[in-house]
Amino acid sequence: MEGWVEREIEGCEFPDQRLKTRFGRLLGQLSEKIGAALPTACQDWAATKAAYRFFDNSRVDESIILAGHFAATKSRMAAAKGPILILHDTTEFSYQRARPEKIGKTHIITDRKDRPGAFTVCGLLMHSSLAITTAGKPLGLTAVKFWTRKKFKGTNALKGANAGSKHTINHTRIPIEQKESIRWLENLEQSTQLVNSDRCIHIGDRESDIYELFCLAEEKSTHFLVRTCVDRLAGTGNTTIARKMKREPVQGTHPIEVLDAKRRPIEVTLQLRYSQMTVRPPIGKHNKYPPLSLTVIHAWERGKPKGRKPICWKLLTDLPVEDLESAIEKVDWYSQRWKIETFHKVLKSGCRAEDAKLRTAERLTNLIAVFCIIAWRVFWLTMLHRTNPKTPADVVFTETELAILNHLSDETDGPPPRNVAHYLLVVAKLGGYLNRKNDGPPGNTVLWRGLSRLTDIHFGVEMSKTLVGN
Image 1: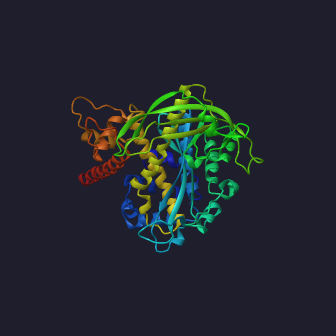
Image 2: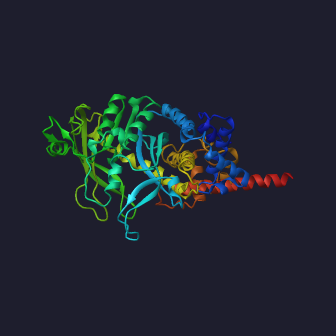
Image 3: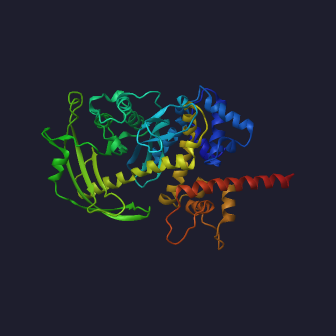
């Protein structure tokens, strides 16, 4: 068993030691064949049958599978310096099954031209929280919640009953405990238990604009930085955040890098204004939640760029912003939020989680939990190349893998460098990375392809040794 697998399963507490051993073996097999089906990864019927039994075992669930990874994340967070950004987001896994009731529902579609009428999509939902450093290096997952809908509840029930109608729903009138938004609060609470909560900054998109979340962060002595979608009451309650911000002067500009319509990086300049103000709870909840003193940051791009919408971020945080430099820091932190979407992309495109053929929600949840650990490691390797290129190579690769990569390396003059950047570049080339002059650093796709090819080469070397020995 590889060292990284041992570290990620060490904190797991299975009811039977044999289950832990099987889990370690499965994690290693699936990480060696990223994106392969279970039979391909397991290689024979006995191992495949054992994998199916593991995912169907009533004593196994995602909390047990991920417990070791959470413990490993906790140690990495404790070793990291400076603030820890906790990125939160929800994603959806869709499946086509003859009996979708065994998995459940995700949402209702009413506007498909090729399929008239409303129909329900079969699948699972996952709300995940990913810890990263301010430089962007992923430290690991801090919380994961899975759920599926046997029937729609809360606002979703109203949406399902009124699919296709113009009936509007006042979300603020429904208690947070009756809505699926409670996952944001549960993940924030679980994440802050892993490390000193004062170091954590919880970051989310407009879906995280939840007043109960702001109050919970204050209760747990942690921090948040979210993009808002609601123009809340401010001050004494006779005005709103938007009206107050219109009166604030532009404090400066800040360039950031974004992708254009052809997915090429370009630099745009944002104008910034910020202000600290009293933000009040929604009408109907003002007796339950107190007003909060928060900082509002508006960052927007002037003009109308071609091929995309102009950037307009309206951010809300409990962190102090006293000058332009501090405001720029918060904008840069929020710009890291897309990394949680990259993690989900590795899950779906790299691990091919939506191609799984398991038939029940419980089995799929257990499988995706294993994929979460593998997807984190691929993402970690990608960002390690960019944030800590001088890390010793033996932290990532075994001696045999280093020998193989040395043989495959283009470097022929003198001893090869011993840092991880050199060897990850060789792995990326195995996955199709061309390393041209104007190419950016290797991405997740070429790395997961390269790792799979490296495993095949490693297996071939071991088989050659065996044949020669015989």
